[in-house]
Length: 277
Image (cartoon, rainbow, N blue to C red; front, side, top):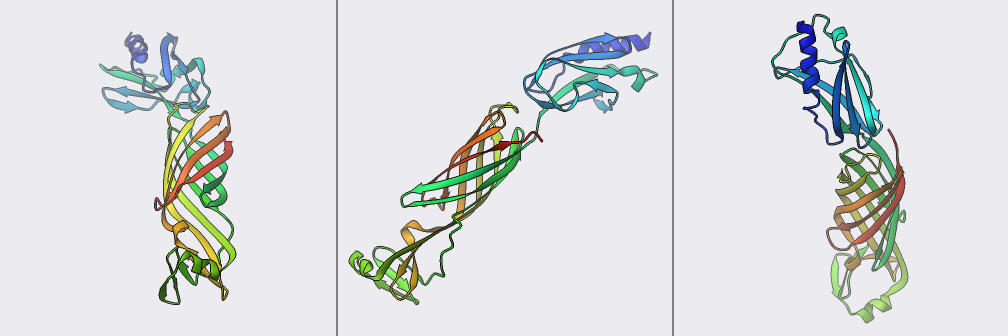
């Protein structure tokens, strides 16, 4: 008799304690020695079940059905717990809580990414890789794959610094000294965090923010085979990365902006793939 009362009590509270944003419409019934829990799942998730007796967590292992890793979304998902095979002598308690929890599925992604700055025109390419569920992380690397020669000095529109000395010049002076050859170098390496604000693991929409190291150099050749960095369009220091990714099933589209020391803005874009594992 005690055994039957215990099972009925569990059945009565199952649908009252559900901890997951994706789990809805929970209902349950007792079938012989089993408790069957039905629920609807709005997106693919990892499903786990816990039981608490008088506030203390008790193990539940004799579960079958729609429980475990990567349960597909759908209505009438079903979990079966063989209670008496796990607790053959039954048990008594005043407070029993049976919970169903859905955890977003961690997914890996890889994108090919490019970036361009319109003024002056300069571009780079690379990749972005990471993992995410509700929250996640990523690593990004981009380069122009063009490496500038050793720097012999620097200049802007009013001075030239070379060989340890600084000389005031005019634009006319610069035009007489430059050969017209230019080389551009860019290197970006960022790590960051991301969030799936769509709350859907099948069609995620991520927003991301990252920090790292950035280098952008525009080198001009002067007479005497000397290469000087043009400071107004060059920067080195902290790279800040911000953007969004949209998914079409497993296909990803990335758009965002990047800056080094907040000295200029660069538009970035990418295409990639969202893997299931």
